[in-house]
Structure formats: C-alpha cells, structure tokens
Length: 133
Image (cartoon, rainbow, N blue to C red; front, top):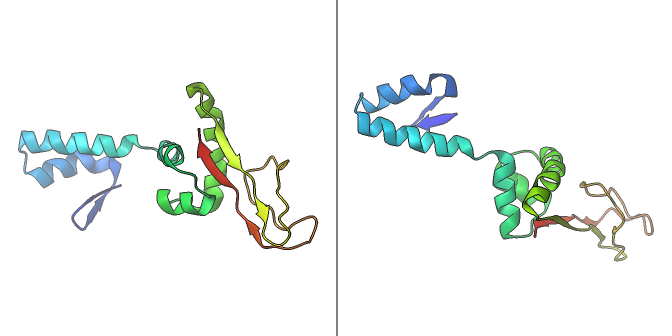
C-alpha cells in the first residue's frame, strides 16, 4: 500500500495513480517510481535483520518496530535464523529468565517465552532477547 497525502493506493493501480498524481511530468514520475521500489524492497524479515544487527531486542520490541504481531515475529525468527547462516552470522538468543528465583531457560529450543518457571512455578519471566552477531 502506498499513501499519497490522505489517499491510500493499492499496488495494483500504483502506475495509474503515479500518472494522475504527477500530472504526467516524466521527471516526477521516475522519482516516485524509484521511491516506491525502495519502499517495496524492504520486507518484514529484512527489516527485522537490520534491527537485530544493530541492537538486542525482545519479541515485543521487534513487533512494535516492524508493525507485525508478536506471534508473527516468532515465525519470522525461525526463518531469519536459517537465512543469516548464509551470511556467516548467527541469531544469538539470550535465554528467558525467571524473575522470581533466577532460573535461566538455557536448554529451551523454542523462540517463544515460557509460561512459568519449572522450579518456583512463578509466571514472572523476562522474555528472551535476540540479536544477530
């Protein structure tokens, strides 16, 4: 979706919208096409990779920065873990930790946060943090 002022335009009719918006001036059309192509090139996963390469974040921070749901972030993280291997990088996971007793979930293989601590049964758990290094 692309927004011109207050009008939102779907990708299907963007070439017509560009011609109407720019009144047919060729230099303006080419600049807008370049801007649109740059906007559409950034996928959710590429955006997440850029964020995680710069700083350590948890799933809630990633979802608010990228604009997707938290559950969708976990699905993308599993794909990102596989795709950064080709760049000779690694998705580093700082494991979740119980805030009640300090238990660290080091052996947990899932990307999601655990529901409760197996030792003290507390539900106050710090979410796992992710970064690319």
